[in-house]
Image (cartoon, rainbow, N blue to C red; front, side, top):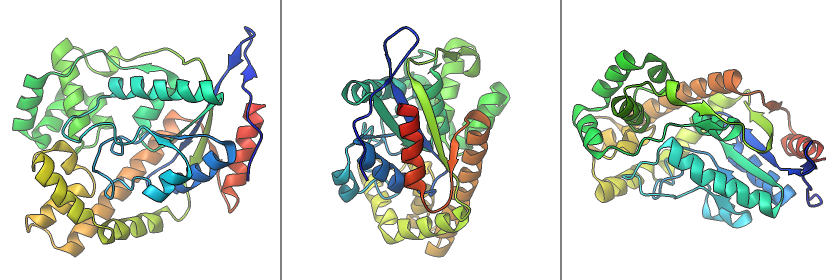
Length: 311
């Protein structure tokens, strides 16, 4: 399917008002496949909004688009940095906005795709994270404490942030504590909001068979080399790399240490993925108002919605 080159609608001031299409949904909901088809249909790049796919060498465990998929359409915001060099929200949004502006200059439309709710919220609503530079000494202390202690500390000091951040998400836990300790104020109290200069079309995926999709995704991760990839990451970045505590990699690490069997590692990965997907669904219901795509003609629905918004 193809469509004519989109032209941005005019804003009240007489200029061009570019469009951002945001395809969102929980993990394993089919975003990658639909995004590629939509990008092909509208001659767009796929701008990834995934808090783990932005790291290099984390391919299997994050279900990063394959080489064949990337050959079909251009993908941006992948492989930005090694996993031992965390990117905070402020850094990511600055990089992502540049990619959006480049697509607006080229086509007048940008396509964001992902399931990382806070990253999407920051880009779509103009959320301004606090400008606190990384604090190496603080981070070293947090790492020495361990993630369980850090998240418990965050629950006491900033319950609102702790409620949003998963108990095993070391990167975001440390960032919230970092901001709190550096400024004396909770993260949420410092996040301003400046609406971005573009229109937004939100499209959502929440298939009824998500549970089965998560099961199949988990099986595929282990079949496609999650454990081997984890072993390579440990060799490159060490056992204490925070990203190795995330879903899939954490279980693979425990498998490699002999603490879990293969079956129990897969089971725990699937369980954690289901829990994460539940949090994602809750976030998208509360923070966004997407047009939910359902049925067998997802691409047609998405293209019609996009063309209607493009004008």
